[in-house]
Length: 383
Image 1 (tube, rainbow, N blue to C red):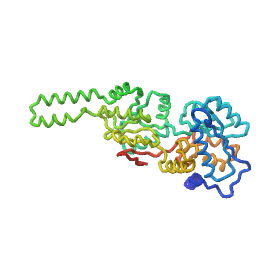
Image 2: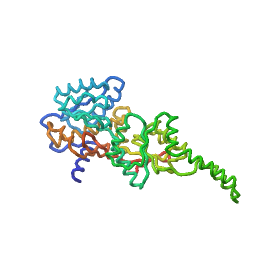
Image 3: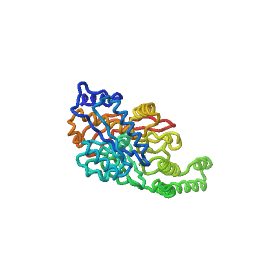
Image 4: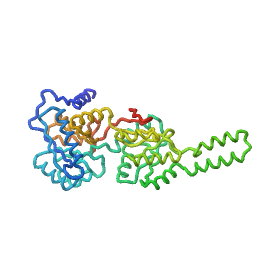
């Protein structure tokens, strides 16, 4: 097993050194389905560049990538996929978005490695390669066990990935004491957080204690009142950690609502999903510390710097994923005959890329993620 992973590490190193004496009877043709027109064409352009960079790093002329347009439209994606079929292409990276997958089950002899992180209702010939919620909850579960947390609640916004989260809770076997679905409307959100934290009761506890001390004959009455006046509530909450499956400004709103109800990240663990090292979270010191799983930060930074230097524009995080997929397919072509390369994706296998270690099983790629803490405006790797 150690020898196996050593081989993988070599293949997925920055230079992608090829195996000595390797030759293919025919070139490996990889299809690439991305938006080349429409609103998402800039993202498609970045992914095309990342796959081109991967080919240069592999340093072989035995692989060709053929980009075709989806226009982020399922019918256009099918039309382009049919063209791949005519070309004899068996393996395709893409499409990016879940809604572009609708008609691809018609092409049974092509395997599509989509960049989506959704895993429900995938066509049988589509593999989800995005960083899915099961991968993230697996890493969060490890962190919870490391810190011996016993009462973790999970908060999920009332959006289109609610069912996906529920499925991932079962798959990861993470222990959740309660799963709350919240409204993204700020006014409704605050009321929900008040209920979750038993805020009104704790606020009343403080008022009752102030009244009791005021009506007492205690010798240190004034000192006790002074201490009470510095408090916002009295009483604890029924959890030691919170997982918030949200992002960007909505995530900040949720943590701010906890602060409003006198539940501080300094006293209760605030854990989120992958934030891709969002710099705006680093600046928000009042909502820190925050904990979350993500890809290897050093590898991501190295990739971003290399991409920026080469193309004079910053990459999107999906570009790192597409870069790794080229290397993965190439590795499989070394180990398997070209006509059987699609079948290997149905087996359970582990690989190491720049994004980290990942396994393929049941039509999805699960990533073994690292874990990070944001505190005092700094990002620290935990594992």
